Length: 246
Image (cartoon, rainbow, N blue to C red; front, side, top):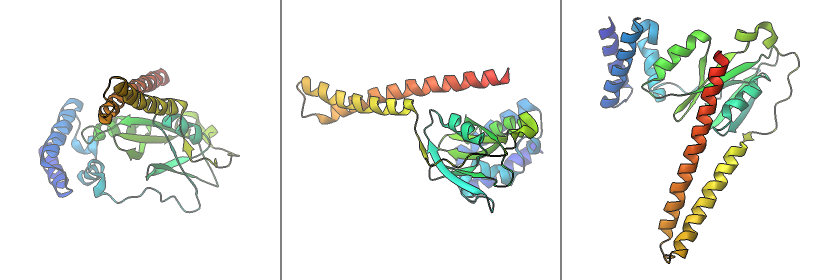
């Protein structure tokens, strides 16, 4: 049964435009996961057509930015150094993310019975997407938006706190739509400073005409700083998730 499932999956992925090498890698990854779990492909991954739409999102119709009738909508963005923090802050005010459109979270709030929401973010690729979804679904997490290599998940806070999650008097929608963390501005300043520093060092070395060398040196250093900051943020998020599970 599983062999037929994966044959249909491979055919569906090919029809949706996925390259052959990616199809083989995807099928191998999912087959390996299925062997470890001991379940059936339908139980673990759902119908073939739905899995194809998840693995090849461009094959699915775009629904982001289409809130329910009567809902209040707010579009906003935040950098990845504190996006989950901001999502949970405004989720506690009743804002539910319906999707991501043009780099912005499309959030809605039920004007009649607003309730609190909580969010998390996971690194997701076409190879592990089905597995991540399967692991999070039992705890009530559902996908609510994807941006490059990360995917966001939401669940109503009522799942953990009960009726108290309903809001009687939520605050008005913020006027701001652009939320950048202090770490983001520090990172930006480092990028600019290191780029300029690379140019200055090149000039001092007597190679003032070679502007590109200075820019490359500054860019390499900036990428290193960015990597360190992102690594620190990633470790902090993992530590916070471990603390929540305790």
